[in-house]
Amino acid sequence: YILLKRARTLNEPYALVTVLGTQGSSPQKTGAKMIVYLDGKIDGTIGGGNLEYQIIGEAQKCLIEKTAKVCSFNLVPELAMCCGGKVEVFIEPVKLQDKLFIFGAGHIGTELAPLACKLGMRVTVIDERKEFANRERFPQVDHIVDEGHLAALKKIGFDSRSFVTICTHRHDYDSEILRQVLPAETAYVGMIGSR
Image 1 (tube, rainbow, N blue to C red):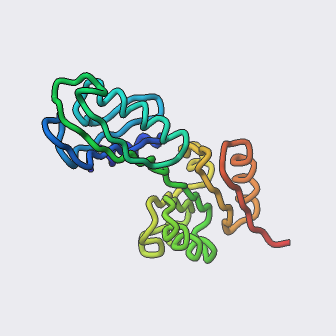
Image 2 (tube, rainbow, N blue to C red; image 1 turned 90 degrees about the vertical axis):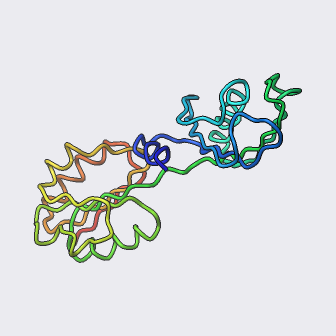
């Protein structure tokens, strides 16, 4: 679980490799895990050597194709490893969580945040009003930023998995946020405003 926690903090696509079973002598036993990143870097091990090299390549393919698969390897005839056994692994690409940034902790934010959490998104609520932006009103969200939107925007790194909703209590705030967010890389930007 330490491997998964570390992989999630890097915010890069990765595949989880798990040894499903072994026969005979093998470098690792059932349950051993390894994380493989798109660039071929790894965290953890399923035994090293040619087996690990082959699995890294298979995991990279799974990441590109966004498909999971089970692979079996005979260590002596296929991989020239002295262990002599057989190993079966499950390779599972892990989808990174989408992130929702809600600017505004008013009535719209309090309705939107729990829905996004139920969808598995990482939710951040931003509002300078501490009486609105707090754990009592938003117990389930990942982050609450109770400072001004311009200061908060300087700290946020948007990317292709970032969804942004702008629904503050002031139209001038909404306009300022929109101007800052539109040039950034995001998956979605939405704003609400009266006529």
